[in-house]
Length: 456
Image (cartoon, rainbow, N blue to C red; front, side, top):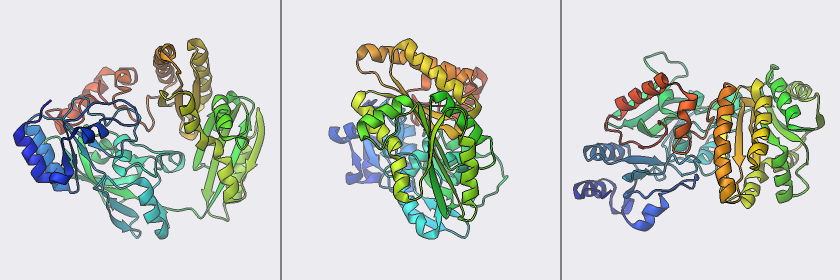
């Protein structure tokens, strides 16, 4: 698409020459995300203020030009790929932490603020924001909200939906609005805040977020349990989650992943049928009892070894396997298919065993690990050539069918984007999808916000 000259004039006037580009190099840089899908936008603008976003959306609506919001492009589903061209609006320069209010336990931030920067700013106040994706040092708060990206601590503290009080945003109509409250309780009308979180920029562009803060626990213990096989570890997860103490992280790593990490990182990574990484936090006086309760639940049929780190250095060593996974997988398959499915925790043994069967059936290497305390596993298919890529895509469809059969869903934190859009009818019945389309039409009647994503 070629942008109308009148629209280009508005963009240059609104954002300034240094923050509005139609040069090919800049457009290529914002054509792709971590999904490795790509499509060239017609222009890239860099927002700094809410009023600029408002003008952008109103002007693009007038000309029926797509608008795609972008944080740092760390998502894996193609959610920020401008598949229909148009304007990519990057929020990387709109990155201020506007307010930290410890008394009322909230912070107000702009969407381009990095998760890691926010955590560092909160630390001196004794608070943290619970969502902590693996990419937290370089992913933006706006991106976390767009995909409801969470990370290991979700098992105890919840996702962005549970940790966001309110938002300021611009709908696809160009209208600005606020939703939510500055209080931890509120029962005033529809909960538009939770609706926008996870909507992947298809309903409105978030320009400000009021985040709920949590006091930082005074102590943390890290445990590592290895098991004879994946089924034993999966059953241990169910036992751990069935007792009263909730861990703040409960990560599952299968035997294939352990072998890859061991080959990549060496002897610090144990070889076993499966492994659980467990963290328990709390106050010093209560932590020993909590660690003991979780340790007892972790023990059982198939346990090989249970270790509890006594120092920060030991804890870091225990986490070495998890940290070595991503680079290890890339060495085998630069085109890995990275999915994050979710099932009820009690169904984890069936999911893990089912994935193992599908790996054998399709002759595709699959690495399984992730946030087992939520039933949220990352299923990584590692095709090494074109023939394996074809088999991997056929296998993926059966993985999703298995997840739905186990009363699960397609994503826990990556979102749907472009990659999983075709599978949405597996997870949601027609009436539900139609209601979602109706909501989309109310917020974005001309369909200019992130077209081609999420809804089939």
